[in-house]
Length: 233
Ligand code: DC
Image (tube, rainbow, N blue to C red):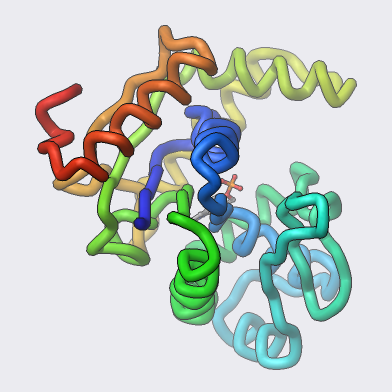
């Protein structure tokens, strides 16, 4: 079973997808991590985000996602574990630039499908999150969810994450960072962020984390049972 969760930055997609996957013994496919890995390659090569550079840089590196023996998702470039190195804001910013390149999207499309095929053979299903997982990568997914929340709420959640990581930032800067990221993701020509026509919309502005997880678990149960999920939200 393939479940896709798309939506803007900070809507809670990744933490929710991860938890749902864990509870249902599915695998969590973090497609943003792949864009971030490509971005790290660009940052380390000090390369500007162009298709030409993407062709050159991606031809001699292999990016993959694996699970460690303790079942934690690890992001690899060749044999190197870059799971932590891809989480900086510099890499996040570069990720939104490389995500607009056709050479990058074309390279990551078969990789995402290949990972999902591999994982769904070993587990009951895959929960993928990103911006175009329901529209482009897995158009025939069994369940598509579009998760969003107000800009204010997303900024508040991102602030909380920063506080937990002991990174200092002002609320206004964080809100502006998210707003700018939204605009870039929504207005790019290639695979822009948009709600798949057949997605269930989940507005998480006033939902707790537990409520988000339970809402998605319930949608998956309904999809498994073959019930029309669009009627539930
Ligand atoms: O979700 P994230 O912040 O880790 O994603 C990093 C960037 O990659 C973000 O700017 C959007 C982009 N992205 C994308 O274009 N398509 C995806 N399926 C996932 C992420």
